[in-house]
Length: 212
Image (tube, rainbow, N blue to C red):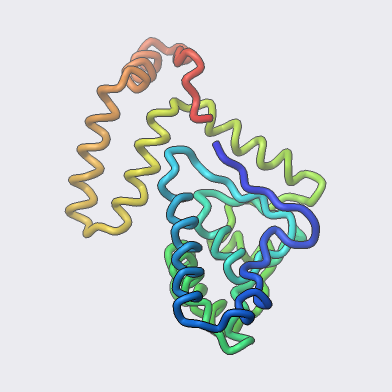
């Protein structure tokens, strides 16, 4: 497991606008946003779940980061926005992540208004999974992590890879891929042990092969 956490008022405030304005060239901006996309895709391609522990505001590319993490737990005081439009800059790269996590109208509203939403609104819209009081945020993340690392590492890794692949496929191709993945997963010793344990009505003995 990977937990991304921040400190202070902001979880992640996005790009440094002063730095961006200091070199106003198309080539610089293309390289900057390509580097950002590479980071976001790396999160998705990791074989372990990535959890955002959001203690403060997450704006623009920071909100994109939350959306790209596999899971997110936010403090009740956290707030979220893709506010580039307020400066005349539509948050196009964050739009990729938001449109794949929120409903289309909810994502587009955030993108065209630039308005902040609360942690509870973020949970309702699907941007975060859980909300906790600030002093309980770490505990809430630990609880979520513990429920995942107790599962076989191979099953979680295969499942994460399939989850994102099938989202980009038509439904027939998605079912074909999912069926092949399940067949492969079923042949793994962790799944064989888990199924046998269910049949035997006993806890599975995975020998510490968690997802951590």
